[in-house]
Amino acid sequence: MTALTDVASSAATTPEPSPPPGRGSRTPLRERFPGFALPALVWYAVFMIGPVVAMVLIGFLSWPGMLVEPGFAGLSNFGRVFADEKFWAAAGNSAVQIVIGLPVMMVLAFLLAFYVVQKPRGHKVMRYLLFIPALISAPATAMVFYAILNPDGLLNGVLRPLGLDGTAWLANPSTALGAIIAVELWSGIGYSAVLIAARLDSVAPEIVQAARIDGAGDWRIAWGMYWPIARDFIGVVTMLQFLSMLFNSAQTVLLLTQGGPGTSTTTLSYLVYRKAFVETDLGYSQAVGLILFVLGLLGMGVIRRVLRASH
Image (tube, rainbow, N blue to C red; front, top):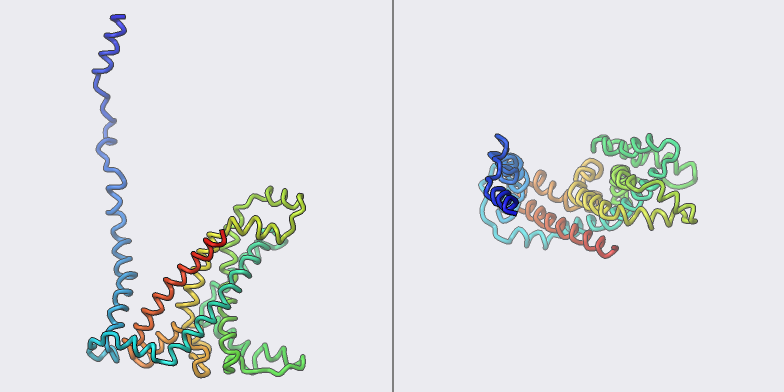
């Protein structure tokens, strides 16, 4: 008993062995992380936060051109914006573009992705083909669709032999905005489908096969099995495409219609471009840009809320 007590007491008083050389002196990663993140933080501050701050500041200035000294305008730019019929026409066009184009794009992208993950013949080639529109530049895309939609283009060439009158799709106020939406759908559906298909691939084929044995059809499998798994990811893709439609439509409009005829295809992002680079009204332009920025934040919040409600 005495021997056991002596052994226990000596073990209790024996100092712990020192750590191997080099290990105890290392600084924890969480303490060294700010140093690694500093370049990225500087880049983010300069190229992401900086333009937003500049946009806010310019939105409160009266600045009729880069060579003219700006003056403080207060809220007068926003007053001019809200009193301008062109702004409300652009806001309406952007709303139509998103309310119609975004749901159609995401539903078709999901259905295409579902078809691809069923691995039909040639499904690997199909993934590459779906991604091709994302690799084509905006000017090249605009040139192709101009050749299709102009009065002597491919679409009218197909319609006339069928006894249907052709139309100037890009010059008709009733069809021009629809043509712009069609171009953006063509550009975005395949890219979204490839991204969603990558998420749907995580579903084990054995589970799908078991569901088919139990009598589940394609519709039930798509919306009962694949949709719940991919819902959050589809939400992210939806937000990306929403922001693309809201902020990037200016290039398609500029290349195909320049906002016309009239204001029938003028969107908010194109209005920002036109006021800044054509009319050189920088204060007005950035006031619209700030409104567009707020609408983007609100839109993402609405999309998140809708997806949460669907859980």
